[in-house]
Length: 102
Picture 1 (cartoon, rainbow, N blue to C red):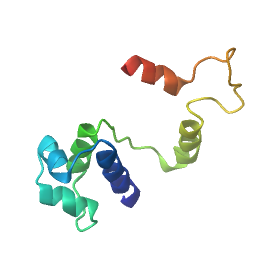
Picture 2 (spheres, rainbow, N blue to C red):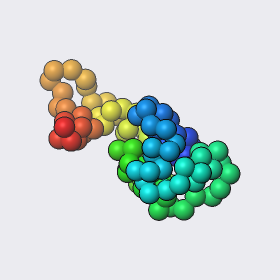
Picture 3 (cartoon, rainbow, N blue to C red):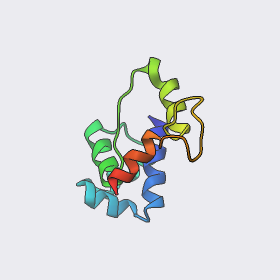
């Protein structure tokens, strides 16, 4: 949970948002965002989901057994292990999804 909250805080700061601005967008009080980021409360899942959505993020639950493989996949930029990089290689799944989002 601590890592998730840290990621949300980093995304807020990277987006140039204050706690108050995020709170307003997410329909929360500034004090709630402050207390979540400060680890002073155990936040509701709905609050975390809304904060993430306002930051352009999406929370996803993953079975614990699949987490290492998923993290490896994300770190590789969506390429399969052993897939060559370069002109002849197909685009990564992550890159394809990012291009579609634009």
